Image 1 (cartoon, helix red, strand yellow):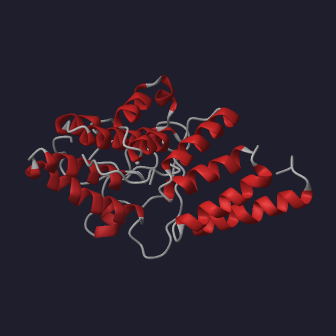
Image 2 (tube, helix red, strand yellow):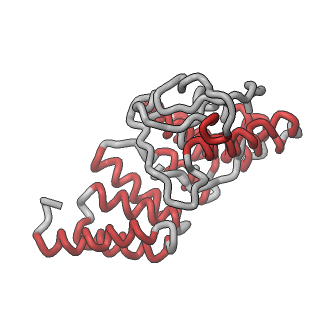
Length: 255
């Protein structure tokens, strides 16, 4: 904001605050606030990012793609690549979504970004009728029945849905059950707004005080988390596989 004249900076800041507050309540109105901010702050990466995220949430996938491309050009960041790929799906172009996911830029994503992109790829495969490939797309290192990160509940449910789609319901149930366990362990099922857990930029998230599943469900004390920011589970590992529905990825596509 320092690059803007004082009145313009105040204008942009107010509209960005409103866009953030309204994003989950009224995405269309949030989008209009972000557009208002772009009238005076269109050269700022944060403003173009806000326009892209609100456009995506409101279902304006063409506008979202354009804004994310501009954000990437200004900032040099590929953080929103999963949302860009999902926007291609929203425009009815799953082939282009897969092309984005195969690019070199995808390799620079952190653990959360890779999980989001995997869910988008699985959805794109489903769009193309490639149900077995949709399952395989979700079999990534982040899909671990015994470890839970903030993205894990969605990833587990995606995998369960993909397994259901190919008739492997008996393998899907453990993943659905573990999604609920992970939500409780991470506090994501609380009625109150949960704390934001920052995974950082490395594959292994920073150490975060997260309750163990035993703490949440009761019972004997479990072993400490096996990785920083992860939660250890008692559930036996099941054969790997996931969900293909297209959800907004988190800014991060809710992917």
